[in-house]
Amino acid sequence: MKIRFSEIFRYLINTFLVGWMGFTIFIFLWIIMTSFKSSRGIYMGVWKLPSTWHVDNYVRVLEGTTGLARFMANSIGVISAATLLVIMLSTPLAYVLSKIEFPGSSSISMFFIIGLGIPVQSIFIPLYLIMNRIQLTDSLIGLTGLYAVLSLPFTVYILMGFFKTIPSSIEDSARIDGASAWQSFRTIMIPLARSGIISVAIYNFVMLWKEFLLALVFISGEAKQTISLGLYSMVTKMTYTGDWGGLFAGVVLVVMPSVVFYIIFARQFVRGITMGIGKA
Amino acid sequence: MEELKKQRYRNFIIVATVPVLLLYIMFMIVPIGQSFYYSLFEWTGFTKEMTPVGFRNYTSLVGDDVFLQTVVNTVKYVFIGGALILGITSLFTYAINNFKSDSLKRLVQTILFVPNTIAPVALGIIWTFIFDPNWGLVPGSLRKIGLDALNIGWLSDDHIFWAALSLLVWIHVGYFIVIFLAGADRIPITLYESAELDGATTWQRFTNITMPLMRDVVEICLSLWIVFSFKIFGYLYVFGAAGGIGYTPVPIRNISIQLFLTGFGKRMPINKLGYACAMGVVLLLSVAFLVYLVRKLFGLIGSVEY
Figure 1 (tube, chains in turn blue, red):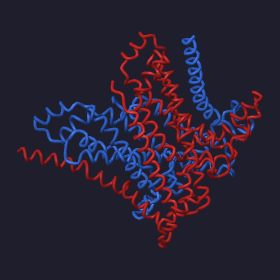
Figure 2 (cartoon, rainbow over the protein chains, first blue to last red):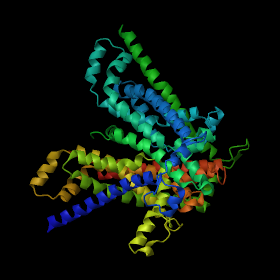
Figure 3 (cartoon, helix red, strand yellow):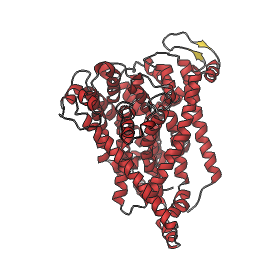
Figure 4 (tube, rainbow over the protein chains, first blue to last red):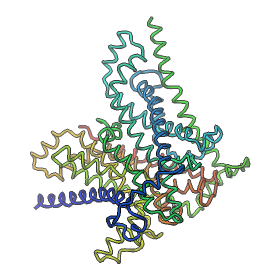
């Protein structure tokens, strides 16, 4: 009797799980389908297959000085630079904090970990005023810098966890052979930590592609918008453009790159999140 | 020679640490202090005029009905959302952990996580279509199966909270399942094997072995969810706006949204920067306090060695 109950229960949960995943996949296919409809077609039936496939939706939203192609280029530029910057800043720091003992190293580590809990929402107003003073508001360079600095705590934390899993013995023998800190960092640690560095870079890349709040606060020029911001402007203009087909083409253009990127690198991505948990 | 090497190490440590530390302090720590400082003024941010008002911004917050509503909403996200998300995540962990094939496990985990890789702006738009009274998926399906009575206007002020919450649950179950499964993976298989020999059912093994040994994972996830509930911005901001109203309706605003609208809202500029900074300070302190509380509570329960 008891076993029976347990089996029914498991069956129910599995059904629920399958339904949940089915919904997720359905949503994904639905936005792709809808992006090929005319606005009229969307009015006629949001959940029906398109009668004719309108590729022109994509052409329309991509082109022009304030088209999504421009915003995608903005996003890719900002995110690549920010990811590169944060990796360059975090990797040596994480290495030093996790591998070399020096006075204050553990308090500096703690100090960075605290940053994981600082919501950017509680500091964006002073940040705006600082950036305004150094004339980096409404600037893609300013946004790049902000993205890099605000990604620091997470990146340092994850990389520290990763460096700790690398046995010190390899490095110790190099040290005895007379290698300097820089030499052993560059020739031993970086190659060993490469997969961890790549994981955290990929994670940052996707998270910054999604970013919306900072872009909304710091970017006001129409041509400087990031992809998320560009899509949001389309929403706010919807009442007078009425271009629903275009909106969905925009949704797909925002969704696809990060989802495809994630699916290709799913394994590294998962490690990016769970590296901090590690073996307890 | 030895001295020279030490010197070189010191240089490396300084080069690796100091610049990053300065950036971090200047752009993340100093603004916290500034936030508190500005919260003591009445200030639009665009003029030089700053009127010191002491703690009046804070006392005004207590009498601000809209702000209080956003606090209640945030608490609802923390508790109701937290219970639903961690509950469903636990059930899914149970189910997925019983899969024999590792690649199936990975596939399921990959699919569940997908919403986390989608831009909040896009999800806000998509979710509006799911609940739209005229053409939404949920109202349409309910109509089809003869449950039109349940179409209570999901985007109306009375019910939009639940529509928004469903979005957050759908996204974050996929996030926490990744952490839960990583936590469950650490548990030595021998524990399960001996329980199986003793005739424990899969559910008993889950409740008596898996969950107790994952206390630290649950603690991390709960803390993360608290932080998320206060921080979540894009999903809610766009979900409300895309419904045609143009700004986020009060019933789904959390503190972050209210803060943004007070400081930088573009549609109805209020630009009360001092007041918004006071909200920021409340937000930061609430998060810190709740995360501390979770730590203490889980400390009381203690941890299990294995």
